[in-house]
Image (cartoon, rainbow, N blue to C red):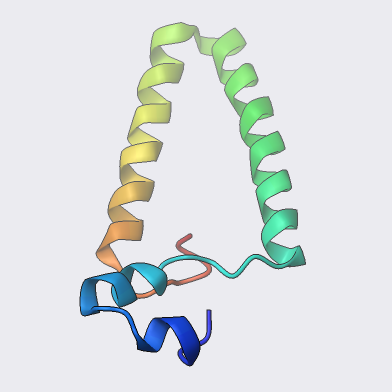
Length: 81
């Protein structure tokens, strides 16, 4: 999002939130499709290999780590997102 129109008129907390939202482009959709498909395949692999509880624990650890990393940045960072 550009800093011109809408972002310039927002309050500081709202402006901070807007800067953490990725721009929806072709690259965004490519990354989303690849990560979703690969994530599903990896979850299936770990479930059939290790079982339900280890897979759920591993997924929860990855989710918590990803959220902590994303929330630690004040601005949108492509790699972190």
